[in-house]
Amino acid sequence: QGCKLVGCGSAVPTLKVSNDDLAKLVDTSDEWISVRTGIRNRRVLSGNESVTALAVEAARNALQMAQVDPDDVDLVLMCSSTPDDLFGSAPQIQKALGCKRNPLAYDITAACSGFVLGLISAASHIRGAGFQNVLVIGADALSRYVDWTDRGTCILFGDAAGAVLVQACDSEEDGLFGFDVHSDGDGQRHLNAPVKENKMDNTLGSNGSVLDFPPNRSSYSCIQMNGKEVFRFAVRSVPHSIESALAKAGLPGSSIDWLLLHQANQRIIDAVATRLEVPPERVISNLANYGNTSAASIPLALDEAVRSGKVKVGHTIAAAGFGAGVTWGSAILRW
Ligand code: ACO
Image (cartoon, rainbow, N blue to C red; front, side, top):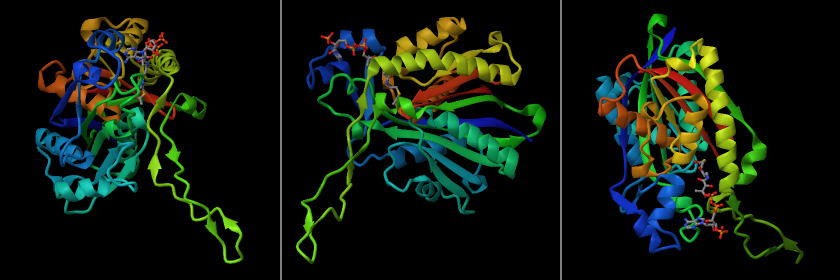
């Protein structure tokens, strides 16, 4: 059983925040941010916008491109670390899309690697369990967990959603092959947003003793990051992962039409491309406009590249995600 990508879509919030806007909040400048990261603007949720609504819009666009009816979707995978509901939002997306046959829908939490892991899960469900049409959505709003007084992190992130429809096909048409995935909990100390223990005043027990109960864990800390360590981790791990995915696919590096990395920092993208000897004109990058949109960044950049005609039917794409956890992984795709 093969599986292939048959549609993509994306959605971004309306509010555009430029580097100059951020320079009014923290001690930074457009020059510092663009030279160190390549980012110039990002989109941030405002008003009634939500991660779920962006995800639904991106998914609708993907279904429209694929010309597949929502009723024919049998699995919705929502890759997000910032869902609107702690328990996940994939079933809400399924409902909003009007998938009346009640497909399975669940969330995957793997930060910036989420979308690549979602693709791999989609392929496994299709090959191993007979699913036919799987929506893989990457959507995040890290703006909700950014410390807007910390110039080391608030300049990096933006909000967005992207989606692809993965469909079962004959094995000769297979368009999703050569996976490589890893995680290393030791790296969590370099990038995290842990639960914040908002301790209540200790309650007195019936005998007058002080109880450490009930606990009150109602929020998460802002994103904490050691940028240099994250940078090193990405540049060290991602080229190996792509090489390994290519080897599993039985393809040489020269077969890559496009390198599509998680859009975290232009310097990371350039360093990985140099190590893999992929020339700049074959590297997809749109982070100047959107910043790091976590699980959304790969499908957002893919959607733009497909709709602009850059990525054409039959092109081979090496995609790689990396991020908090830490997790990282690659997938070789044919559009
Ligand atoms: N504006 C101006 N100055 C700044 C800013 C800013 N926004 N941020 C930091 N500085 C200062 C620092 O205070 C420091 O000053 P000092 O030398 O006086 O102490 C100086 O600039 C250098 O700071 P560094 O942190 O060493 O700068 P670096 O070159 O490492 O760049 C950056 C920082 C851009 C964050 C970089 O490390 C990076 O991009 N790392 C990868 C981060 C990343 O991709 N994270 C997300 C990936 S995973 C996920 O997506 C969740």
